[in-house]
Image (tube, rainbow, N blue to C red; front, side, top):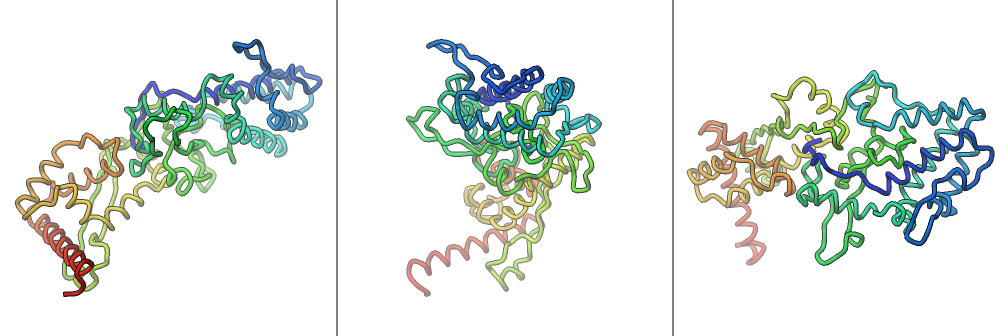
Length: 385
């Protein structure tokens, strides 16, 4: 987790509703003899009492019936299943205590039926008008509430490199686009959390679909437990405060041989001053979301253009040094709201700490690249001179 969320960031009411229905169903099934509406909750609405959307919607009801068909026989076994799921509702504890037993759902047919149900709740049931009515909310409204409590920042809190989505003016919450909602614990491994309100956070498309996918935050490739960042409140852990970016430029002579090459030899994102209790979590964040490698590539490829634009196109070396010192002297106001702002601040912070000889090499590189760009613009406009 790069940035911490506001401590009052709300959970999604629709998922609270659906997760509570799942728990209620398991509890009522302990003594249940037949699959019926008695296994589902009743809701008080302005036009009277109604059964849960999980019963009245045919497709959702069929998923619950499929689960009913594979529930263990006997009151004791069903009670054990319910108690296991209920006892493991506090997801955050698994991220800090590697000795805390993860919920193990067996046999496979039971796991698969729960996964099919909770996946359906997430993909389909949450969007039903009756689910929105009974919860008094929607995932779209939750997303806008999420933005408002977090200073209306659209920046991904996991990576700080991309926007979550784009809002448009004069539209109701229900009509705005929303970000992807990442299952913090992937549903392929943790089926009981497929519709759990504490298992979702809006993330950018790269973090959710390209980097993380179905990666397991709590278990490494060798099958061993590990600690990781839990991104939702009450946890406030993050790593932005400790992040550093180090750059090593290529020589101008090398670039003149191949001007289209990236101008930076090496970029390293590291956390040299992070406390020991965060280092393991940073390592998991690095592996799962692949943020540092994304930053390192971006800085290497667009270094000259971005530094020049952020420093307002410095006119000479002295101007470059003055602007660099000014920019690096204080965290920019948009470091948690604009794409990449935080990371480029860290780049400038590193540069400002270097000696005059190093900075002279950087300035020579920037000035040469700018001249190349001007030349290319002239040729594109007037043809080769």
